[in-house]
Image (cartoon, rainbow, N blue to C red; front, side, top):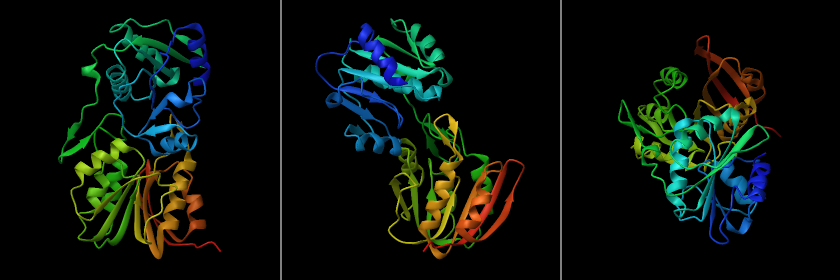
Amino acid sequence: MQSQRIDIALESGVFSIPPSGVIAVLRPRAGDDLSALPKDRVEVVTGFRPDHDHFAVQGYRTLAEAEGPWAAAVVCLPRARAAARALIALASAGVTPGGPVAVDGQKTDGIDSALKELRGRVDLSEPVSKAHGKLAVFAAGADFADWRARPAELPGRFVTLPGVFSADGSDRGSEMLAAALPADLGGYIADAGAGWGWLSQAILTHPKVKRLDLIEAEAEALNCARQNVADERARFHWADATTFRPDRLLDHVVMNPPFHTGREADPNLGLNFIRAAARWLAPSGALWMVANRHLPYDRALPDLFREVREIGGDGAFRLTRAAFPVRKR
């Protein structure tokens, strides 16, 4: 879909890229088609590990963080307003003044609102409309300092950034799970999908924990976790939990698994987290998990663990302990 809008914008002259220099593509998602752009000039900038790896495998130069200088940029609009503003600010500052910045997104992700805001600040082109989305272009150089990502400080001296999961504070599911963990929790543990570290910090209050692997696919969230979790037992991994391999079998895995791929709900994502946990655990190991009650995880768990028990929850959340992973022969 995105490639169609870029094609039209290039052919019509709405998006006129300079003859040389790097073209930054900020936050594309796996599946986005970038073939309209010259591949040897494209620099994909995304801190989400599955997307990063997707474009790296295709041969694109791919970075978790970059600030330019670039000849041009394409902003792939995320749904979160503060995160979208921060990407636009990054692009305007990173592109050589006067160079083109294209802002592209779906209507369901708020592209109309974003373009309306931009019209009040820059000279914005007429939008290219196609495939339930829009693309418009402005010249870099405008001051978007007030849109830049700024850390938020939360109670407990936690730091978060716009766009990370539960950026305004700890979520109720994680709080319920932390309260349900046994007092004697210990050994080698992983927090799968650790986010900015609230649940990890709760796990590390247990003195018998020997090591905690924080596994998080979003680089910005993991950078926050590095600030929030100051404990020598913590190890930080920028990784896709569904493909990550720990260096040893674990005693426990604790998680509040995600179930969204972009805007759409995708229960298979959480199921893949559960399958990964079963692979990581020692024969006597246990998974401690919170999930929305409507998700179908309870039907899959008995195929992966010999002992499955609901240990709490409420009308919205289910707390589960699943132990003794089944080894496939």
